Length: 282
Image 1 (cartoon, rainbow, N blue to C red):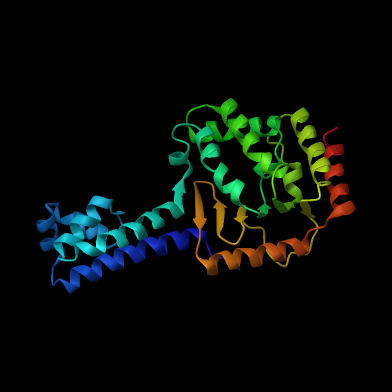
Image 2 (spheres, helix red, strand yellow):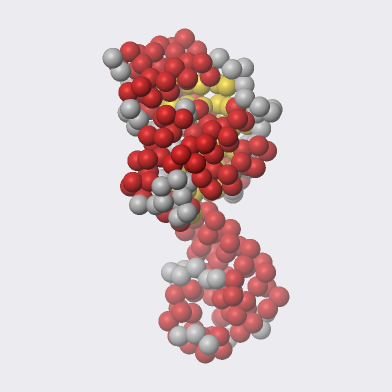
């Protein structure tokens, strides 16, 4: 079962800090002595060594030079960048609005052949209609207090979603039934979105399953996650996107996806749940 993805990000940061600590010990330096050599306040080396402050590239270079091993800087910088890219706050990603994030992920979507997506809160982005996306992104912008470029972000998400119609891509998607009922947009847009699900599930490259609210749970509801082939899993939490690339963690999420898929209904039974949600709109 998946552990907290945040714990993986923290572990990666801790590994960088531990490595820097090891260099300091091997050089026979105290934290205070290292800070003096680097020209820092003595508390800075302590914060970095304890993993409380992520080091910048310049910090790593200075640390390695102070320890007499400048040749190790490049490798540690790469590890530090990877650790920081694992956990990125939404407010940071959306600091200039949401359009840019969608545009930056287009290459990832285009090179992915097999998408496996679990949604426990909203309809997955590649299945969203413009009206549904507009309602959702307006809520996110308001909550985060980030720049309002909703119209541009909606257009960018629709452009990115062309992968479901173009190219050689396969999609296996599992939704909790509650996703069909959450009204994240106005009634007309919700109806349009549900009708779109009924259409898109007919595509030969799309497998859409719905876990009924009444299903006997063999796996509890999880945070939403997107698996891109066997190379990366993006986990969405309230505050951040966490990107996992370690093979063991990817395997765990794919195993969870298999378990969730077994609880889902497909075909006619999934259609009935979507149609029921559509009827409930009145």
